[in-house]
Amino acid sequence: MKKLIILLAPLLLISSNDMPKNNNSATPPNILLIVVDDLGKEWISCYGSDEISTPNIDQLAKTGTKFTNFYGMPQCTPTRVTFLTGQYPFRHGWVNHWDVPRWGGEAHFDETMNPSIAIEMKNAGYKTCIAGKWQIDDFRVEPDALRKNGFDEFCMWTGYEMGNPPSGNRYQSPYIFTKNGSKTFEEAFGPDLFLNFIQDFINNNKDQPMFIYYPMVLTHGPLVNTPIESASTREGKHKAMVKYTDMITGELMQTLEDAGLRSNTLIIWTTDNGTMPLAASRNGSVVRGAKGKTSEVGINLPFIVSWPSKVDANRTSDALIDFTDLFPTFLDIAGLPHNKEYTREGQNFVIDGVSFKESLIHNRDSQREWIMGMGGGNNAKLTENGVENQYLYRDRVLRNKRFKLLINSERQAVAFFDLKLNPEESINLIDSINSPLRKKSFNQLFEVARGFPDIDADPKYRPNPPQSWDVEVSAESRVWKL
Image 1 (cartoon, rainbow, N blue to C red):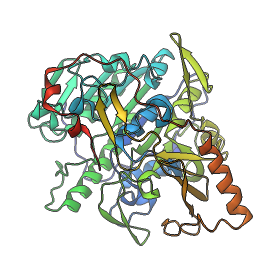
Image 2: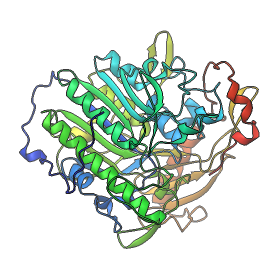
Image 3: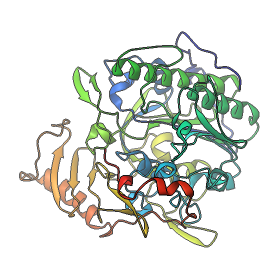
């Protein structure tokens, strides 16, 4: 791998007004989805962070649209599987975080029983690539898992593999899985390898549409120093990791620019959930990271979209979007049908998401009236029936642009917040729904929740065969709580 060129100053990206417009509607756009691990708005300067400067991410926002109402799930696995499938966790079953390489070889993301966006993009003629973090398959058991999911090229941290301590390394001397198998890359920094891999993929595939999924390992713990900055405190290391994330963002923008692809590339920059419990100042107020919680700090995530030939620059939108919407939006942008139901190889699938292409290209308002996040904390167990969610119905929150409703695991409405008047969610209005506006929103959101199945699905997969390392972990120790 070539060495990463460290940029000591912010990259100067060309604004959309300076870029030539690509009016050839027959040319499918490239798609680059960047999903940063464990990072909330309070660490992004264009979202009001007082702690840090993120000039390259800010510049990306200036070339496109910054969204203020984008929901993920509060944990890693539910968010990522929701993206892959376009389904809410109650439907795809991965309601809780489940670290497949670490907690159970028989469990896995089974692309034959679930929608998978890369399969659809590959079938649409896209060259596909993934680099970074997966964790929903054990590559020792399924070395072809990524290929079966539609990815032509891949460079992945394996995830922590039970019985294989070196696999825990994602940063210094990382343990990486490629087509040549898994090995430790001595003296390397993992984020550099993933960046270089994507850069090579871009430069080697300029003449065909590309679909690139970059689920970063940054800024998830363990908190570490980076090649360009060292610190002695947890907060200092976290800031260094955020700055490195920003630098990588700039590198990718420059790579696309140098390749002549920036104008016809849709870039989405977001995160999978909020930050670990670290305090930061945002817009003058102290915010504590809320990974694992369904508060706004835990699931209302940064979401930036830049597509210079189509999307207006320097715009902010309050349109309602969540992770289910990426699947149908990518199909829509690729010129494919994006119906609520579709069939692949005899399997019928339901898609919960709604395309937000019109919100992007024509600056239209939300294509939906509510968004949802599911599950605070975590409770899953490996039983004789496989991975099972211990709550039959996980707690969830639904919101429109102003009001937010919390439903508990007993299907009861237990909290109702006016986010316009009380963005901190400190005043529960559940016993004060005494105005027509409040009543209307409460009834609309509660009616949506009543329409969900009474019991959430468990993950759907054909079990992989037992592995020798499975005996090293008891079923009880696989129950993981934040």
